[in-house]
Image (spheres, helix red, strand yellow):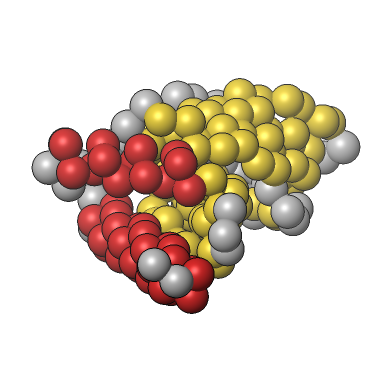
Length: 166
């Protein structure tokens, strides 16, 4: 075989694998965004958090960039500021990655807002997740857990949180 033929075969296989992974993540995102059942642990009293969607925001030769979105609902009569949140994300028990929120979120009294949890997922983990998705007949349970730094009128509080959907 010629060297050009070997390079072409490697490039074709790489392109095919990237296509499969992106197709899988789009299917997962569609499946995930249509599911409504979610559970959570209490997060600073009666503040509630529920995941809503997952979006692929970029990909390269080593990993995928994903945004997991969640709605934070504050039924309380006081507001709060989420300064930062450090978290880990799992899909069907597979650790996908960890991250930290990239902005401050102001939660006014009796309101809701959408938070974004960005992570980078390596291709090896993406393929394990795809295998789990297939084995579980299109079902993925997503879990996010971590610690949030919240400020309420100058009082800084560290609050653990966890939510699961799927």
